[in-house]
Image 1 (cartoon, helix red, strand yellow):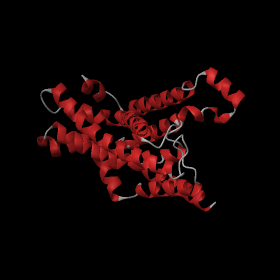
Image 2 (image 1 turned 120 degrees about the horizontal axis):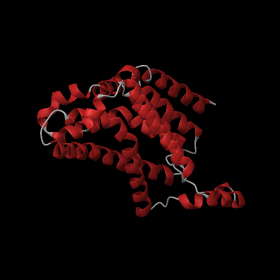
Image 3 (image 1 turned 90 degrees about the vertical axis):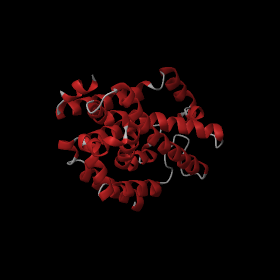
Image 4 (image 1 turned 180 degrees about the vertical axis):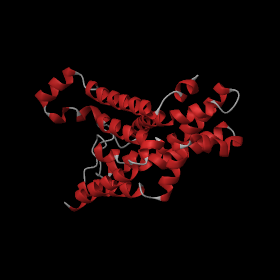
Length: 250
């Protein structure tokens, strides 16, 4: 069972797992462009790749972005939710059915988030604030995104959501009687409260930048570890604020 394996893992094991996942993201990035295309880019210039990634401002382009956000959210959030899923597995009967319902509720929240993220990306792209790789074209807008993402690290909402993510047993015991679907929705909402601002800074690094996404995934996973996350949240917020001010002012 998942819970038996997860229960044996120490904080060091979790860090090693999360680091391995981040390294996998980096390797995926390195392997994402075939050598043949790299050679063609040397011949035709750096803009050669853009022809393959152009976002069209229509329904087809929107669903392309929407699908990308769903996949990205699943890839980035699933590892952070694994401890919570393992805890829930230990609490009741009909484990397989209940876990599926829990997962359905959890994913529903992130699908809704992905929809609004896709709407935001399409709007920013249409008005010229994003390029076709999903990266902000204005340094001042990048600075604002980083600044407010940093400020959010210090809010009571962020701290409340982190407290629930770091103690999934306490969270589930409080709401267990509401059923797996409702618990999945609550868990998704709490996870969203932890991570939405950090997810949106992907607009600064580039929504399609897999290396940046891998780094963000690693930071969000470490932040949810009880013994180590508390040493990351505030310094990360301060770093984002200073980086944002630097981009906005200079």
